[in-house]
Amino acid sequence: MVLKTWEFFFKFHHLAGLFIVSFVTAALFLSQDINYWNVIKNQVIINEVQPAEYDNSSAVCDFLSGKWVYDNISYPLYKERQCSFMEDGFACEKYGRKDLKYQHWRWQPRNCDLPRFNGTAFLEKIRGKKMLFVGDSLNRNQWVSLLCMIESSLPPSSNKSLILQGNLYYFHDIEYNATIGLYWSPFLVESNCDDVWHHRIKGRVIRVEAIEKHAKHWNDADILIFNSYAWWLDPTLKILWGSFGSSNAIYKIATKTRRYEKALATWSDWLEININRTKTKLFFMSRSPYTFRGDKTGHCYNRSEPIFFKEGYLMSATKHGMMRVAESTIEKLEKRGVKVEYLRITDMSEYRRDAHPSIYRKFYSPVTEENKKDPTTYSDCLHWCLPGVPDIWNQILYAYIMKQ
Ligand SMILES: *[C@@H]1O[C@H](CO)[C@@H](O)[C@H](O)[C@H]1NC(C)=O
Ligand SMILES: *[C@@H]1O[C@H](CO)[C@@H](O)[C@H](O)[C@H]1NC(C)=O
Ligand SMILES: *[C@@H]1O[C@H](CO)[C@@H](O)[C@H](O)[C@H]1NC(C)=O
Ligand SMILES: *[C@@H]1O[C@H](CO)[C@@H](O)[C@H](O)[C@H]1NC(C)=O
Ligand SMILES: *[C@@H]1O[C@H](CO)[C@@H](O)[C@H](O)[C@H]1NC(C)=O
Ligand SMILES: *[C@@H]1O[C@H](CO)[C@@H](O)[C@H](O)[C@H]1NC(C)=O
Ligand SMILES: *[C@@H]1O[C@H](CO)[C@@H](O)[C@H](O)[C@H]1NC(C)=O
Image (cartoon, rainbow, N blue to C red; front, top):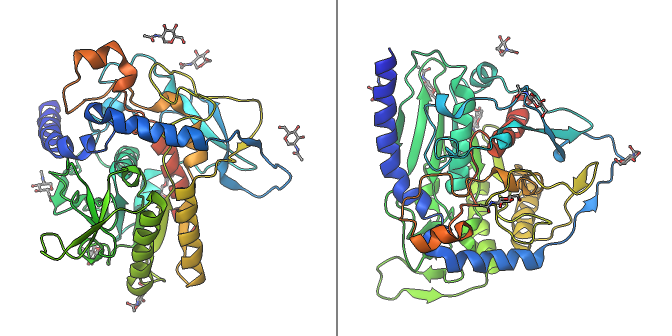
């Protein structure tokens, strides 16, 4: 029995390892992309605004505004080492992190509580259904978190294999006939970084009006959770008019906001035409933060505590141009009759500078001696340790799905 588990464990990690080599390192921010990381960091710090005090006059329950409360009784929701789906990019404890306080924070919305996550009830809810996360490695972070949260409700004998099929990586539970997958398309629209194995591309190119190649795989899903943000910050990203490899292709440079806007317009047109509005529930995860309000160093290395400003609830006054693009795209879509639930997890997560892998993860490209002298140069402050912040995002998602 024990032996069997280990065998599986080894196989799974071997496979997953291969897969993530290209997947996660391409997430831009690791050692070879240090200059690029500074570009992003500076942009965000300039945009940073001090948070305003929350208007607590209303008694409406809003899961997305609240505060972090230390709770080592109910959290974490699972153990890193006991999750069969865990990946080395998120396994901070396995990679040497000693301060584990980051696992023990509960999100307390104002005026209400988040429902307790119940994996059995969730599987029951998605019986016979297909749920897909679509996007980049942050959605992958959240997808792994959800599988870990569900696993404790699965019988020990159940088959926990993941299946890779084109850009789709998924878990299927036979008893509940439920599928929970991750579809890799970091820009949502077509790009030259769409290969799940090989997307460490210098000179990234997108086709801002082409989405069908990916989207045809989302058609039959019952729940779709999109994200797309970090990859758009690449200052060298080019837009291609025409097809890849065509002789009369035209390449253009556009501003970050402009190209994001065009791609999201393509995405929303596709949804409007192809989504069955009574069947498919749509979600969009807002930007996952990679710098931290009030911490001007903007990195997560050697941080073991969240940021606290003062007692009470805070809300964001941050105005990010690109987040506004996503928000207004979703508002327009709603006017056209397609409801996308926008989960603005940015603000709540911004306090959690303590919860990123930093240097405690597997790095797929060599960390140089030079880097080691200053760990802030290669710390991963983009993804999140598991258990951790994405578990809370999933609790919010759970609350939305269960009430429908
Ligand atoms: C939980 O945290 C409190 C306060 O920090 C501490 O006194 C207690 O020993 C902790 N309990 C466990 C089980 O770690
Ligand atoms: C979880 O949900 C299942 C199915 O709805 C229910 O039978 C069980 O009692 C729930 N567990 C808890 C701890 O609430
Ligand atoms: C499982 O669910 C799919 C829809 O996701 C459905 O087409 C199929 O018939 C179901 N299979 C069984 C055995 O219920
Ligand atoms: C588990 O499921 C995978 C994919 O469906 C399959 O290839 C594998 O044989 C299954 N393993 C067991 C022990 O049933
Ligand atoms: C949309 O989904 C609903 C519920 O699953 C189904 O009854 C209906 O036939 C679907 N409509 C179309 C046009 O496929
Ligand atoms: C980590 O932070 C603590 C407290 O802020 C400080 O004393 C310590 O020197 C730091 N360690 C490293 C390796 O930077
Ligand atoms: C709002 O919060 C502040 C600080 O937490 C508190 O002093 C004030 O009484 C609250 N107001 C209401 C209406 O709850």
